[in-house]
Length: 414
Ligand SMILES: Cc1ncc(COP(=O)(O)O)c(C=O)c1O
Image 1 (cartoon, rainbow, N blue to C red):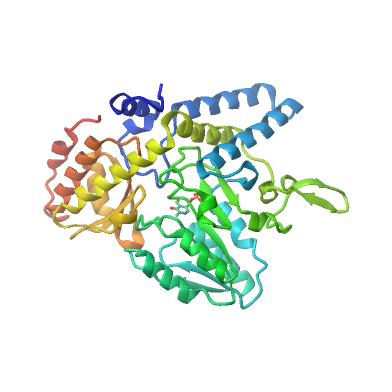
Image 2: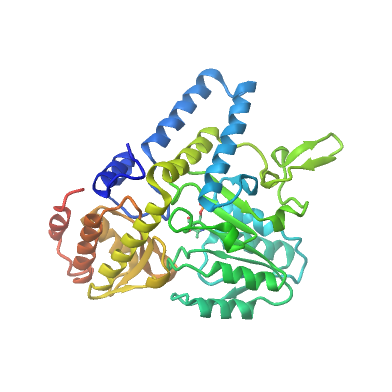
């Protein structure tokens, strides 16, 4: 059993025991999907069993579902330091970014602004408004270093008086750099535009206080750093958008009441951005994983350990001859992106996965490999992974020896 005040030498093994997937390899891909807590999987299976045996249609089930959805909204609100009424549930980060992007009353000739380091989660909805509404899309070019002054200068040039929306990530999926969201929010608002933030690589990895950041929308995934199931997420909606009666997409879930003549009263809170039902075992899993992190593991402990381990991983990688770390060390979260000289990322990751059983991913636009360092990782795992990187970096795809595989694996799976 994990407790917030356990000493680390007891707590880390207990955490790893609670996250069985950490034994499947060196788990360095929480940026895609985090390891599911045993307790979350158990609760989801139990609810699935109840659904199977008693059905999903009686009044008690409906009441439980309503409470469960509030539990999930409240659990994310606690992580983001906001109120329950400002959180809507979604099915993914991208779902929330679509709600935010279409919340604007677009007219032909309006402008949307984003950056050159975005994931499709922000870009794809912008593509759709450009295609459908004749909106001009400006991409502010920011280098991999994402120096805050350069980022703000690039956005300052891109945000023209006809800009209605600025849409970008808190932490870049590609470089792992943190962007100065509070300053970007101030700039965006000074030009009369809305700010939508993709928090996929931030929430659960670094402290996020949405009220202090000042974004109008902030989209969160359940399945990444919050260790929830797939198909879950949430969207923070600031008073700036809740004070306007406009809906984006709409369904029975958006309304307090709606009659046969389509006269209706949307919810005054963020539920007005929800549309219909959710898979209840997933909602339960989302709430349980998020609450497990807050109540049992401890958010501050998570943030401190993630920052320390990710920083150490970046240092170790940077010391390996032939390795170039792209993630700026002074504004990182849990992601570390790097290149190995002479290696394309795909073959490099293939070699690394074979030799160290690492679970990671490539970042094709940067021709780089990305690892996601979580609070559940150990120093020993990171050293073993870096031994693997050093081995790959010391060779070319043609010269790498076949039997070296055994040497790196011999470290064991602690
Ligand atoms: C920055 C960023 N945004 C969005 C996504 C997509 O997340 P989701 O599947 O929750 O929409 C990812 C990762 O998959 C990401 O890294």
